[in-house]
Length: 169
Image 1 (tube, rainbow, N blue to C red):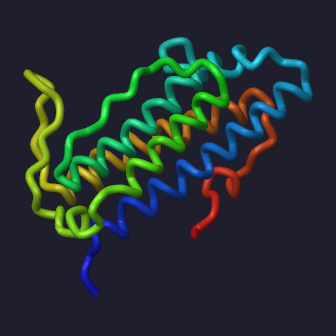
Image 2 (image 1 turned 180 degrees about the vertical axis):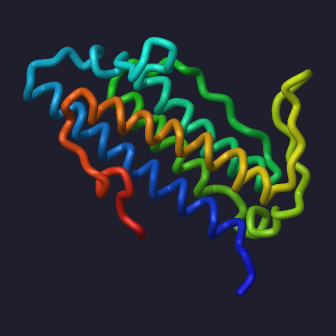
């Protein structure tokens, strides 16, 4: 069996982003039930030098769309970082999932050896597609998705591992 860059990337991003959207549903319901101002959760951080929840979700979505675009060999769409409600964050995730669904599966599947360059100036990094996905994009994506989940869990939202993992299909 050969390694499929498509199978290793798009379904994983789809699974975790779909689960993250559902976790945001639970967070919004929690805020309503407990009479917590939604902005308090959206701006919550695990530590003062870390991004707040809203930014964690934005960055997770950015890594999913950027990774898939680069692997497909297309331009990365630009999103304005203006989301300030749970509904807007879920819409950003939905937009990301819709974009990923439009990408050429074969272009991604054949991207293991494609040259990928990220950053600029001193922050320029060069990878093969496989190195980029497995050693750069996934760690960053999972960090931000996990941190978003952890912020909510830390703030009393009743979510567990199954909520983070979501559905396999």
